[in-house]
Length: 230
Image (cartoon, rainbow, N blue to C red; front, side, top):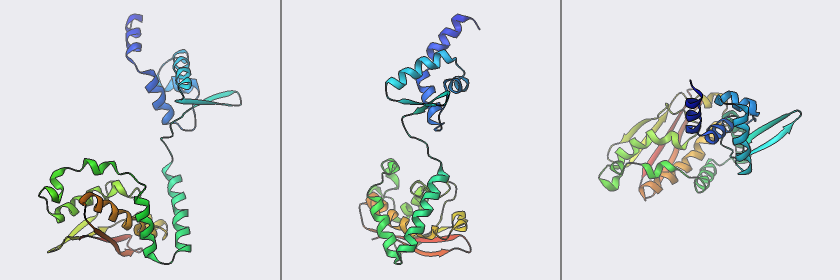
């Protein structure tokens, strides 16, 4: 490739974006050489752009011995294993301190007040009862959305949804929940989720909804949750 062609290719690249993406995906820090090797560029080019990013406050650096490491100022990555272990600690504390399971649901309701669910504004109007769909159809549809609310659930582990005929009620059956195998503290999680789900569906449908945990089967790693629109 000629120098002219290399120059044109270089100008078409967004080095700042490439550098930021690398640093966001490597929260433990990277040297200029690390970044240059990863984005297939030169140390001179990376040094030029990373200095600019640092002056803009998008990157910060730290001297560690003879090395200078660069980090993204935007914290976009946190190991899921760390989050889950921290969460288990919270659940353990709840279980030791709170005997009344209804209190867990109250905590879940309170948590929902502080959370944002972007998917709510993206729900197709066609599936909403206010636009002609039935409440039962909506509850079946909500089973597909559940994993967007519950971060412990695998995106492919959808619940079996059984609609109760002649009512606005559905039973969600969750099976093969490996989290229940790891610790019985996770049973507390589903009571928290019942409160959170209750708030989310009520806000979507603009009407009162009741969500309860009907059964937790630790031996078979299964949970049964009922959702009823009043």
